[in-house]
Image (tube, rainbow, N blue to C red; front, top):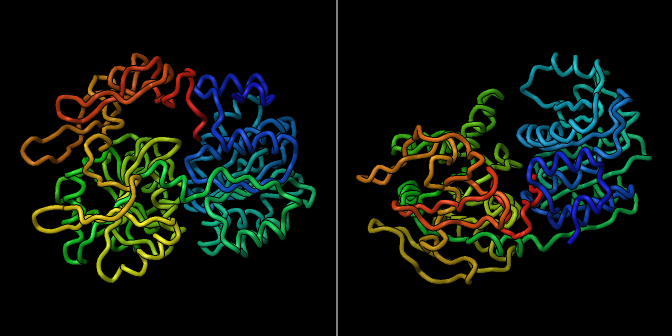
Length: 476
């Protein structure tokens, strides 16, 4: 088995990975890192949650020279949230190189602060197209020394209408650069972008996207009407009792309206969409990561690129309009080998959109129907998309019963089954009691007395990969 050590990474970087419990590379890292270390252009088709962030960050960190103040690597992302996440991982690795600086450049953040950091010198810049162009036009950022360029979530970047901005930025980067393109899907516009701006790229595909989806996520369709869709959602939440769930709505207004209804029903929920200020968006995401929120109601753009550990369910409250959006949405769960459940609510008017999705993933999804008496099976679907009421796999993940479980743990109200924010426990401690074991082949433990499963004790605080090699995969 290939390890990071065998890839020839520096001792300082290896130590940082080891301190995080990351020992063995994921498939995308195993295939991409050697090519990138060799200086090749690479096109990587892999879903989010497969470890692609480390796949491009580790080679970049090996090549950047901290003694030179100018920007040497540029990572372009479609959303602020993704830029923030990549920056957090990059800063952990930058500790291996004294004097290395990392800048996140995105809208909604104090531009003067970004300007001061650029003036002091920064070797790695991670940003969204609009803010990057703002700095380039101001003259505060120059790309003449950039030798490594990453286009992350390229399909979503173009779907959001950033093609002209991305091309303008690329043309300002020297042609002698190394270009890395990462995308969950490979539509024609992404292929054209790669053909235009990359030099004989190596093509890496980890698996067919639909196959990855089917292997890790149970997919269910709940037939309902527009009038009773909200009741159907609440019924499914109470039935499946997700640890963390992302609920997708088509518009900002629908997300706000649904969030209000969920809060009135007693759920710990909040909304995430483009009308929120950057500080509010960051506040919501912190609460969700810390499990102080159970439900995150979001629009597609706001939630793209979000990588939160422990998301057990995705609910498509509004059906996605194409198969790529569907794949991206349900990819918020079932990440890095974990299991997840994706529930899509379909009204009669959604029949054609549902058929297109099923054609795109080559599977007829399991059907259930919502009625006043509850949710019942109506047949269809394969073994990978069986009913979400299967108690053997129902969101028992991530709910330890000991004192060391995640902060914001929710207690049960026996009278109506609603969750309420609890006060017991901090983040998982070294004992791993009821928390997320690392190493030793950490496995899901049996359910607690309340019926909610916990994870068995591991040797460390964070969750292992469920394998016996004592380390977890690099999932960032």
